[in-house]
Image (cartoon, rainbow, N blue to C red; front, side, top):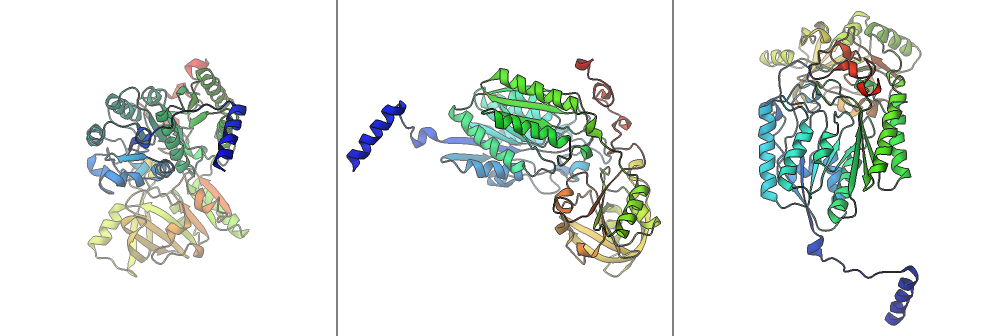
Length: 519
């Protein structure tokens, strides 16, 4: 039997011109990758002061060692894919977990950036030599005196690992990047869906590509383009044309051509940084001409559909309330008011309409007011206590003005990953959740705590641009979705020309002007 099998193998090899190659030993094939995360979506126009080391460690201390391997969906996707291969060792570098306040937090201080980078790079030096580096980033981090922090991270890693060790980063599609990151790194993988269902997929792509580069089967060549378009994030939902079509075009290129990866950043306009706006990254396997061809095509397509990106005007709060009343009468409930513009969490524009128009069955999730929570704690407030206080509307014009709420305290305690929140019942079957920081509610399950049952409400007010669609829209739960504008060109609204940029010339971007290279 062995002789027959060997003869068949000789025949097959003769037929298809097989060549005999030395199989590498396990020791030769072993790869060691350093992995880290340093991510923040920074609203530089938001009030509250800069994010220092204390804010970066308030949620929890930095991840260390194997903790890094579970730090977020990008990282988990990377680790799962890497473990599909034999002899891959992953070394977690000390990494900050996140900023208290999330995307409502402002600039990171240079001191904080240098502190965490110093700890991370010390770990990297200790881990050397490594065969590759994976970075779970965001792309919209903003740091005082460091114009392009993600590129700076890659540059500092490159100084240590040398020119031949591959570096790959994964990013949120709201990142602000240009060609600088790929000057120091080899590849960049960006989510193609908003909400970001595919963050784990991009982490997995990063792992497989890092292994291929390290083992010599992929030689990345890249091309970057800036189409010259800037959009607010509420208009970047990939469930709707043309944002959906842009990402489909990227996927089509990836399907048509071998070893091609196309990444599109829509950008994050509330970070006052020089690389703001849409960006296209293309990566090919040693084919720079193809990379340029695809990058040009993607950039020109984004420019062609630029007018469609801005769609229909959004509803002002009073109009939104009237639409909700009509939807309720028609039985088109549950209804979601998406307060897309509130970047600080304390905006009261819709809450005021709920009170003034005497809407019923509304869950307001949430209003940020750490001052109210502190007063409740100081007064030793308890469930069933009467509540008569002004809430929200305290961080500036974008937040409106405080609204007086009279009702009953139905819950006080931990919730929504905060140490303390409060629930106040008021009016006709209405409830208000008060939190110490901005909270984007993505899933109805997040509202199942204390006395709350989402099914008892007809309408929901959420502080979210698109992410709420995960649990309220794309599941089929809500029958009516109303995107609500703020009554003025404030921070967070679609009116970006109301922002006082210092590092961006807005007239160089559509719709506020024409890019210099398109004039």
